[in-house]
Image 1 (tube, rainbow, N blue to C red):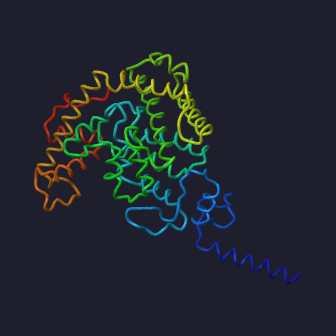
Image 2: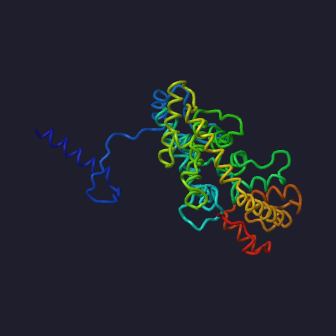
Image 3: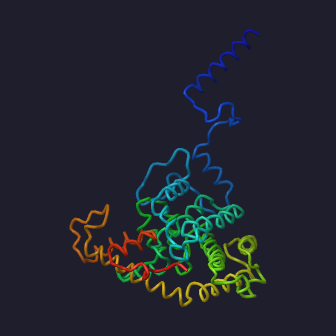
Length: 371
C-alpha cells in the first residue's frame, strides 16, 4: 500500500511540475485533450496512407523557390495557407470589387468574399474526394491575389506596360504578387492556372479550384446582379433553371454534386451533364447580361483610363512609389512602368479612385461607378 501511495504522490508532483507556468483562459474549463502531439512527420505518414491515389502528398518543407527548414508540426501546404491569410495582397482583396466597383451596398461581393466562397466550394469537393485539403484551400484563397482594382478591366489597362506577356491576373498573382511569400510550387501552379484559358493545373487540387471558381462566381454574380436591381431571378434561362433552380444554395449544391459524380464515375475531376451544360449556359448569360452589358463596358473604359493614368504618373515619377528601391530606375523607362504596375495593381478600388482625384485631377462624377 505504501508503494502505491508513493507512486500516486510522485504522479501528482509530476503533474504539478508540468502545469507550472501554464495559464488557462478559463479556470476549470472542460478542455482536457490528453495524448501526445502529432508531429509533422506522423501527420504526413497518415495522409500518405489515407489520401486518394492521385492526391498531392505534403512532404517536408515543400518544393519552394527558396529552400526552407520544415515546420515541426505544420504541413508544407498549411504553412502556405497561413502565409496567404496573413499577407497584405490577400487582405487587400477586401477592398477590390468582384463585379461592382466600390459598391455602397455592403452585401455585394468583394474579391475577398469571392475567394472565401471559392474555398468553401473547393474544400467541400476535396474532402469528399479525399484530396489534400490544405493545398486546395491555399490555392482557392490565393487564386485572385493578382487582380487589380476595379475588376477585370484592370488587365486590359495594365497589359500595354508589360510587353510580351501582358497582364494576366492568374500569372501575375503567382509570379509577382505572391512571390515574396515563397509558396510551394504546387500552390503557385494552382494559382497560375486556375483560369480556364490557362494550361491545366498540375494537381487535382488545382483542377478542383478551377471548377469551384467558375461555380462560385456564376452563382454569386447572378445573385449580386439581382440584388443590385440589374436582373430578376426569372431572367435566368430555363435551361439553367430546370437543372439547378434560381437560388444560389440550390445552384451550388447541384453543381458540386455533379463534380463529385464525375469523380466517382471516372476518377478524374470534371462535371457530369446536364449540370456541365447548364453551367456553361449560366456563364454565357452572365457575360451577356452582367459583365458585357453597355453600362458595364462604359465603366470599364473609365477604369482603363484611370488606371493607365495612375501607372503613367508613377512611371514618370518613380521616386513617389512607396517602399520601393528606385535607385538606378530611369523615369519613364520600362522598368519604372513595371514597378508602377506592381504598385497600382495592388491598390483597392477606393484608394485608386481617391488617387484619381488627388493626383490626376479627375472629377468625382467622372470616376468609375459600381452599379
